[in-house]
Image 1 (cartoon, rainbow, N blue to C red):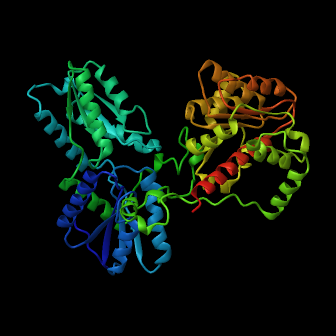
Image 2: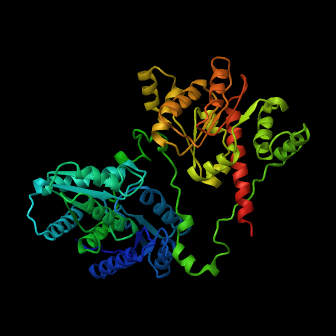
Image 3: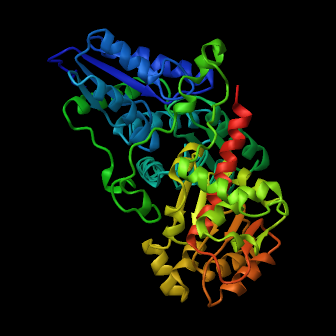
Length: 527
């Protein structure tokens, strides 16, 4: 490639993901050494996003301290997902805002570069050479294993890369699976590929370096070979330390300096409406890695941190809110209610302005503690309408890292409601069942039809939300739906009898659970 011609001191920071596996770190650092050999006129260093040190922050700071006038960060990752779209840019942006006299550039990740196709081609050929057998490519299925992310754009790039290899090298077929997050997972994908009837499978981890996940992929391939002796299973190498990989990093740096760094914005869920991800358009770039940034150095030097656990502050109400709850606590005899329910009950009184609103509340056995654990573990609250969603306290959601979702206004929900002849609220619940499975808390505050659909799916499809809160208000079907939820023994549930309720009630229950969760964490992490 044409070397970068600096018109001012230029520094390149390669932003690696980081790993707990020392083999992966050694390979990354070997690639950095190779990169420096191939571009001796450039100042190159590296930092890690997670787990390992130096951190990206330390790497950029080192370059600035050395006198760099221009800094270009290149993501040392394969594909543009959350890390390359959010976490790494946020690190660079922090420096750009505090060093306005310097020139900062952000490059694209390695992506589907033709040179990487050549590297994988060589790994596949080396794998074929391991076997004493001669098998036509027509009789071979190529199985490519990607990392798997929550971004369909990145997952789709793995499939595109695989298809290009299949057609370019003449394989009979190809199959894509993932090591996590996306489906099919490795074991399921290998099992399915083995049933396609090919004489040979070649398993290729589409990874940059060795690590825990790559080792698991190879272990799964070995296990498949033992189970399916009639199919030859070859294990190809990952990309690894290779001159062409180093060259692609330099290409991405060159593009960034020239203003030509291009992401696949046409299918980016943060920029355009992608089917199933419409609510993420315009999401702010927020880092998700602070808790594990530089973790290995912290673990190696525990005296540098005050505690190994994130400290939580107890919930602190506004003075007016605190006075309201003092009045509520003194306003009736609460001794008949279980102590663990008091936060929720008193918040419902606060929301409704009625001391008797709690008289017909129903709590299934142990539901409060179950709900708290569900929020802390699943980190998802699904609501039937946006009024419930907007009633949730944002500060508590952020403190606990809980995401919310409401599908009532999504285009797919509208189409589903029309196609099946059901309400949009019911269609939103059906979409939540498809989208989240069991790992969520369901809060219904408006539509009896949403409760009806939830209990139908629970009974007929084996759906098991971690908690169902059903408190809609109204006169048509409301009492019947809530009574049916009380009888739904398969799930933990909070509901009431009669016509009272509403979106603020459902939101108040979730807020009460979050307050109790924060206070429990604060007590457990107090010094």
